[in-house]
Length: 144
Image (cartoon, rainbow, N blue to C red; front, side, top):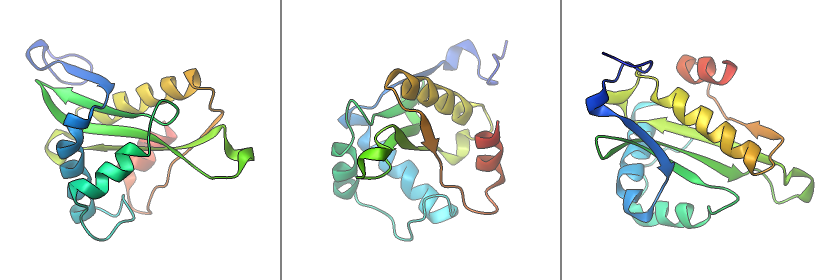
């Protein structure tokens, strides 16, 4: 019987800290968003090496999480440093992306909930999300 995300027990969603071995899939998902949406604010696809620099800039304080379904990365989320100014040390940018074919199954919502919980544990007081006009799904998830 489908769970709250519409997924069955056979395809259980696992959300955990991302590992370097997830980077190819994370890059693929990000590039899909660059090609098909305005969500990333990037205009050219990124190489895995470019995303490696991004990945390496994250860590314990600004983690990246991966959503895996049946062992395959289908989405990811991150907390990124918002500003170099010390007054913003308790502020982070929240980003999350789900592979197009898996959207509408509650994965984005679960990623967002996981990251909000993680941000609380890490002592963040403010989360900021950049959402382009016309991105109704992201607006809905962020308002929720």
